[in-house]
Image 1 (tube, helix red, strand yellow):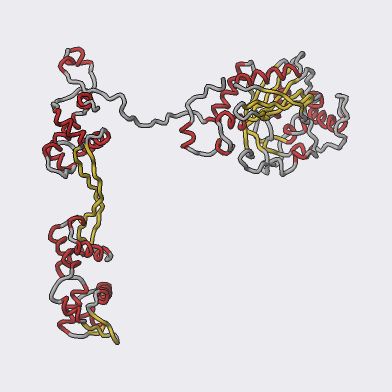
Image 2 (image 1 turned 90 degrees about the horizontal axis):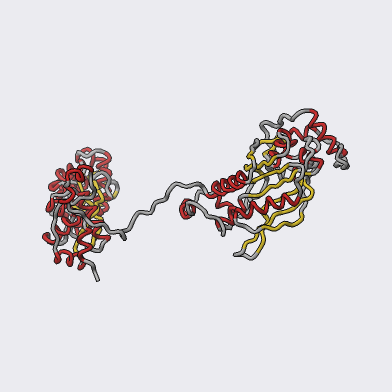
Amino acid sequence: MMDVERIIDELHLYEKKVLKALEKLEPPVSPDDIVKSQNMDIKAVMSAIGSLESKGLVSVHKSVDKLLKPTRTGREYATKGLPERRILQLLSKEGPLKVSDIMEKSGLDKTEAKVGIGWLMRKKWATIKDNILRITSEGEKSLERLGFDEILLQKLAEKGRIRVSSLSDELKEAFKLLNQRKGLLEVKKVKEHRISLTDKGRAILERGFEIREEATQLTHEDLKTGRWRKLYYRGYDIHAEYPIIFPGKMHPLKRIIEEIRDIFLKMGFTEARGPIIESAFWNFDCLFQPQDHAAREMQDTFYVKNPPETKLPSESLVDKVRTVHECGGLTGSEGWQYKWDVEIAKKSVLRTHTTCVSARFLLENKPPLKMFSVGRVFRRETITYKHLPEFHQVEGIVAAENVTFKNLLGILREFYRRLGFKVRFRPAYFPYTYLSTECEIYLPEKETWIELGGAGMFRPEVLEPLQVETPVAAFGLGIERLAMIRLGIEDIRMLYQSNLGWLRSLPVCHRGRS
């Protein structure tokens, strides 16, 4: 049942005025009729109509009409006659004429004469044979009466403007004919609104209401003087529709990166950063990755043309890395048993992991230490739903006298716990760590485990050239795959596409998993 009192209480002053106008005026009612009746601004009327329509108190019939106005040429032709009419009258007076004589004797310019002859043919008022123009019987009849296109043109010249909807069927066809001719008419689309009361609106009017000034806010002066006691306050509909708002928020991938950064900072880690363009020395050689390793090939790594080479660190460090590669140095290892090439180590690459940041940090800082780094890395991957050539990685190391592999597993377990995941570890192989493991998290909804990164203890061949004598636990974890799990998406490309619909649908914040 309709709550009439509540609806009346919530009506705006302008809405009440529009309802009163509709009660007095004979339908159909236009917004202009209401403007004149209530002495209101057209914007206020249209706003009130829209609000009343949303409440079901009025119905609005919208239509589009065309407003016709003659151009300067159109008004001239309305007085002198269309080019074909003037040529027809000339033929009636002079008899058959050569086409070449028409322009001279009719007073038309070349373009008008050409157009006039064309329309003579189209209207079947004349024929051309052997370049001679002759009136037809249809043309003889037309000398006695004007065509509907000519009548419409004269009406337009007389009235100034006419709506197409007001024309007779014959004149509507004439409009189509005239509109095919350039420069005679100005045609403007006009929207029309016709407003009528609904049964619900009539019920409101039958109940009746008073039109009086309303207060929408209280001022300091109202409270100070006591004027507020005499004011009339309009009711508010707390169930009214409201506009959808899309607040500014952090990109979901950036948000997850910040969450990871916050976890490591709270676990006592120090954040470090490194260059995106690295030397092959720091990216591969310093991490005991042989120079003939498949990962160094052009199809796996982005090599940089400018600069083609980068500056290497001190000669002593370079020599120590060379020795470790060739024979193992003082580590007790045999090395890779090949001749190490310093020119290969100088090559510039886009870093393929952030582990090079860890190596630089170990050179510049003495244990005990806990460091992490978050950054972009680059690999020559074919773009698919699960691979990109550019992605993010979080890297970390812990170095101290008593650090063990068990400590590493505990750190990773705590990290994933804070993210809301259950983790397990399985043996793996990496060139620069031993023992090594891969981290897998459990997805309850899919009842499966998924690999998210690798970890292990840095080999002596990595630590000895850097003059690090304590054990170092290291890990490198992918972020995009974690983001896909968090956001429930199957295609990694979604993280980098400007899909506003998807981005707007995401919550402002994320509470993580329980």
